[in-house]
Image (cartoon, rainbow, N blue to C red; front, side, top):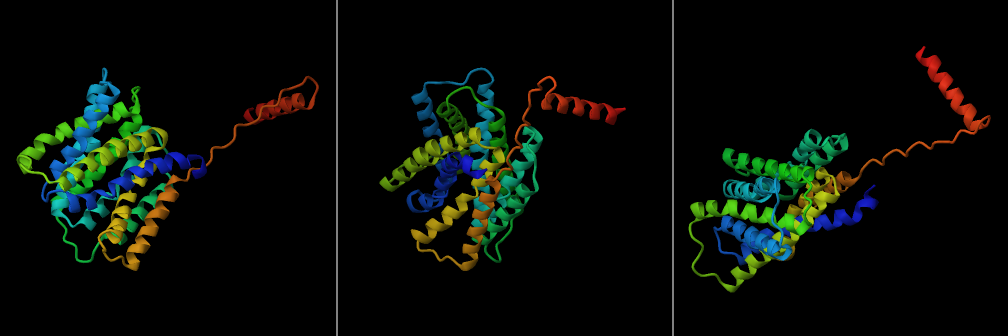
Length: 316
């Protein structure tokens, strides 16, 4: 039941809510045309800080596991997001990215043995429809490479969530988060230098504040909450919470930037929220049968003998 999981769900939901503010911070505080640099400065300083605070390095297989998870959850995801953002309108990229819960549900069934229920599938379809109503605009230009990048970003992020659920680290949560952020930032660094060149020689106070927010709040805090949620909740439930990001981004655009909000967008927001709630509901497990001790000559003993007799006759 949702009530039993309300606290971990709400805590995990803070992560995509924070990520929903990324668009506002990027457009208002960061230098233009440097999304990969923003990805590096968002992940790498936060990861190194968490490693320094926890004083824990990976052990054994967790060296390569951290590299894989960091690539999926951060490095590859940010790079594909960059390609999609440059080649597609934002609404198209967000709508394609909204298939992530459906991808995670399929991967969870294949790798974790989770049951793929009809409610999960319908909630995933409703989530995509809600996001499209919220952010998609008529006449949006479609680009093949951009669509592939947006879909690839959804797949790698879903894969990262499912693998993070499958590989439970024995280390503290903040240490594991630091390993992944550092790995993702290091993988993204040469890509940023190759595509965007050297960082700007001068950064304003606004730029520094924006990068500090993305690193400390958007990465260190948000990813710690996200990975905590992966440990506490089913992987599919966590990915559905990611649909909060376009809802928060749209709400901030209306509240802070004065952007218009149409009735269709409001309907889309409510559809997304309904899909989120439906995806968190779990069918209660059946109660374990109560065993009645058999007393010689008593009712329990006669019931047991009767059950054994019926079983014998049914199999003979």
